[in-house]
Amino acid sequence: MAIKDFPREEYILPGSAACPGCPSTMGLRTVLKALGKDTILVVPACCTAVIESLYPHTSFNVPLLNIAFEAAAAAASGIEAALRKQGKEYINVVVWAGDGGTYDIGLQALSGAFERGTNFIYICYNNQIYSNTGIQRSGATPYAAWTTTTVGGKREFSKDMGAIVRAHHIPYVATACVSYPEDLYNKVIKAKSIKGPKYIEILAPCPPGWRFGMDKTVEMGKLSVETGVWPLYEYENEKMIFNGISKAIFEGRIDRKPVEEWLKLQGRFRHLFKPKRDEERISIFQKHVDEMWERFRKEFSR
Ligand SMILES: Cc1ncc(C[n+]2csc(CCOP(=O)(O)OP(=O)(O)O)c2C)c(N)n1
Ligand code: SF4
Image (tube, rainbow, N blue to C red; front, side, top):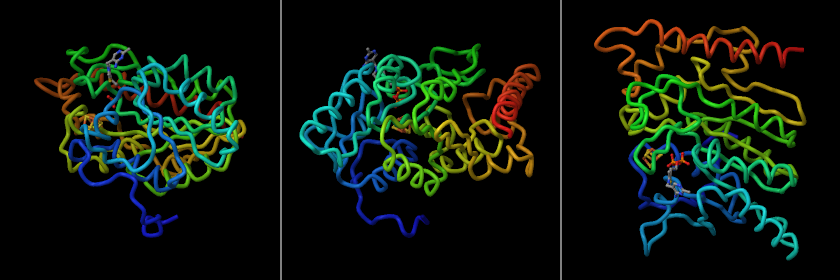
């Protein structure tokens, strides 16, 4: 569906507490247009729990349960069971959580809900940091990135969350990026039509956390995909399909842009270029991305 044909209804109303250029709000706006009004959101501690309301006001137009940081998927399982008992299975139960709440502290609850076969959509908006509490590292923070807890640059690579989720053999796993709203919209529509657990992870470039201008969110997301740092795919019934530019990359029809183009636009990687170029860490980063695509080719080529 083209953006011009998206439903006119807005579920994120003016007056939210988001930063200008916030990718979380952009992504959720598209997600809620695809889900419609019969939706209950479950939101653990994260930026969205602040964005949604400054008491006594709220800027979201759907019912929402705020829950402890580690418990979103467990709470969603409870809501889904209650709705089933009431014969209200037409209502979408959707977790909207950050990467800290997904890769790290909420991972146990997430795994449990997938294993129980909970009929819900779990959406992680991945801004690669704990941004709500002031930009700490998470399990999704990339190698070499500055955060307030990785001052010289993170030493570890991010977790392979896609592989962790795919290992649960749930019916639908997809990645998306706020810069491609049509792709995201279509993926949410598809997830809504499938019974059982669904997982969608949305790359959410965060201007204050990644240290770039608030007018550059869309550009930064596109570059994440064009450099291959962020692959777009759907993994449905154990079959992998890459989408958009990632499909062209996977099929070898276009070359990935060098990761350096992505790194040098973000203040969190400034130490890789100033006061002098850190050739070693730039090439370790590039190699890590190359190896991810190599793994995809080995695992998913026919
Ligand atoms: C058990 C627990 N530990 C720590 C916190 C503090 N806390 C609230 S939100 C947050 C960061 C959330 O990060 P993420 O899930 O990535 O979402 P974002 O803030 O980036 O949107 C932290 C550490 C908490 N609420 N509960
Ligand atoms: S810190 Fe990032 S994710 Fe949080 S509200 Fe601001 S732009 Fe959005």
